[in-house]
Length: 66
Image (tube, rainbow, N blue to C red; front, top):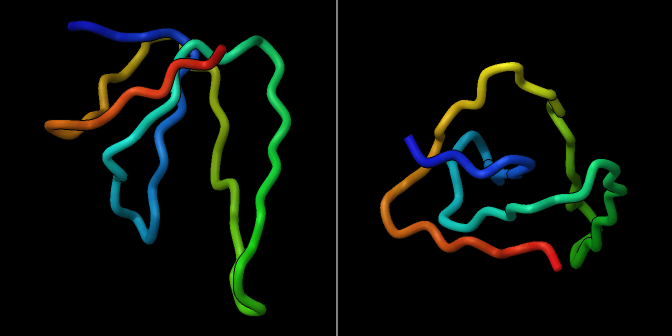
């Protein structure tokens, strides 16, 4: 199994999106920009997993933190 540490995956309405970010630092702050008056965002969970999981979809694009 090929797992990248400190990876974040995005779900919209419960659907995994085909882009993810990897190589995140130990500490992260969130910033969200909204385009429409009724837009909203919820951070459902942030977990430090003792055993990594590999949740991915075919053709997903990796964005490397730099």
